[in-house]
Amino acid sequence: MDIEKIRNMSIDPIVQPYDKRDTILYALGLGYGADPLNEEELPFVYEANLRCLPSFANVLCHPGFWAQDPQYDIDWVKILHAEQDLVMHQPLPPTGAIRGEYRVAGLEDKGEGRGALLHQEKLLYDNATGDHLATVRSTLFLRGNGGEGGFGEPMVPATAVPDRAPDKVVEIPTLPRQALIYRLSGDWNPLHADPAIARKAGFDMPILHGLCTNGLANRAILSTYCDNDVARFKSMFVRFSKPVMPGETIRIEFFEEGAGKLRFRAIAVERDTVVLDRCSATVA
Image (tube, rainbow, N blue to C red; front, side):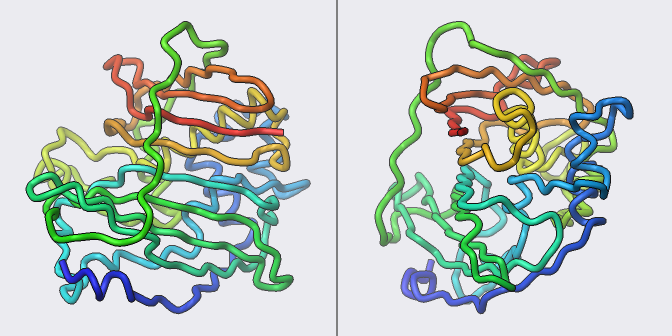
């Protein structure tokens, strides 16, 4: 890798407008509206009193797959999305224009043959008012790199969830076509649509986006601990441990730690496989 080019990498601020169609489509990609009589979910999929999901911040103002640029000399084919951290400072407006400011926060060298962790930070602002709405950090695991040096402060490692029975459990079924709906919100990676591409990547079928599974956890937190009030959702961290196959049921297990603090994990029920691990959230 060219460490100095990565350290000094600069992306111009990105302004992304979105309207009610975008807000509603994102919610549909997370399975909202499956029950047409569920009035608690209606504000996320109906323009009257429309609400924008906090996890929509994860996909807004995306800078594109810059790591694929040859000048950085990153083995981009072996990149995996490892972690995602979202802090909400104010609720996202249901429609508007968001400005994203982006930087590489650090590169954590795990050693030769062991890979490296690339930490990215995105600050989201209301483009009209300048209000800081959200801070998004994501970690990429560069499996094909390592032993080349690093910079910045490493993130504090996430700890295991409590070794006890969960306090609350939420199950959310996904649709076989869910990845095809979710990708319309901005992630067009053919891995999530084309069976031939999925087989080349080692999967029997196109997999669900990791950020869609992340959004399912956001959905469960909102319904279980926030009465679907987006202003009460404050933060969420997830570690992606295994892929999800569209059509699987996702069980989110919550461990309450008091004062609005939660730990949780997500399990693909049909395979009894943990797909999000060492997760945490805070709510008001």
